[in-house]
Image (cartoon, rainbow, N blue to C red; front, side, top):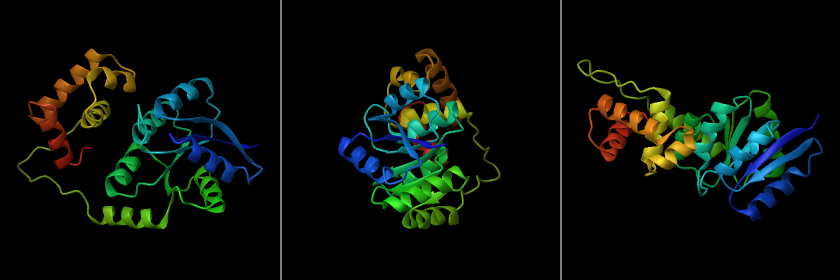
Length: 215
């Protein structure tokens, strides 16, 4: 049985480049392509047989990290490898938090890309060497525990999702659409976030959350 791969990338030239790499391997079949995260979610709703997604990060409408989180929520059986030009700490950390199974740079040669797909489907976690080194550095600097007299801040998974969306500067309507909830529900989650973080604005909420490594 062939492995069904989806490519999510806003640059059609790069989509063709990845398709050309995958065409070298007979047991790989293209499931679909999409130019942003919204299209990806829409296409998955009609074709859930995809085994693995190659996901770009910077895309219009809905980026790859937000889309990864949504896909993992709705279709946890689908593996996701971030295929991107970004190798900064923040993107790596956010991608892993969102549920990415691997992280490769777009310059990855065809055979290495194929091997990464196979390893990921077998339960492995693949990374470009430079990305792996950055990940190790992140792990070597564990989160600082709060002082004994400071209560640990605990947000629900949905509140963290809303907070991540707020950090992108998105309005309630856009957040509601991305997370498949109503704007009033987004507003209620936001009020709960403000109360738990003891803040009074989106900017304060995002800064406090980042300082406490909640997002």
